[in-house]
Image (tube, rainbow, N blue to C red; front, side, top):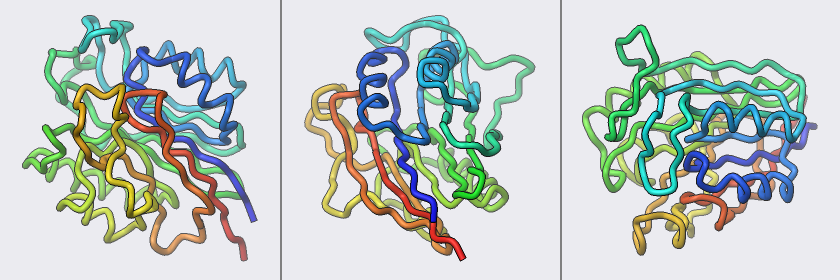
Length: 244
């Protein structure tokens, strides 16, 4: 039996780094999944916490996207951890360019990637930052990219899938995920946006997910949402992998 703690969070660039560091210090997770992270901050974090990991670049930011948001270059999704095992990443949508796309001031300027770790003797954990849409409404682009993501998930076969999915729980695309996975965010939760730090004040929607594969031996022992660390709530889950 293997027991681990996983934290997943959209950290909103470099706006909340002290809070993110504090979260990791308090929770002491074995696996950390980060969305909207600058590569230089990923390097800072793995050095600070003595972890290994994988960073997948999605866009190059040389101008701030929102107030207080840095312009520190290479930006993407990442996973880091304390446990042995293989890390990897792969794109399920990639813009046609020889270079990393530059931030255009509009959402969805970059690639979309899945990062993962296949933990030695434990579960395979995957994370992504899915295609943005206003208000979490389903778009034709999201439908196309979900088909690509599902194909990649069929290839990687993660036991756990987490991240910022930018689509509303209960909607068409969330239902597609439920054909393969179990949703472990408690049903009474109606919002994963931080009510203070997110720009959409008073807006309630569940877009951050923590899924386990339907046929996996992984069980979620506990799960909580943590506020005050970014514009999204952090997901902190303790999981157990049954063996035999």
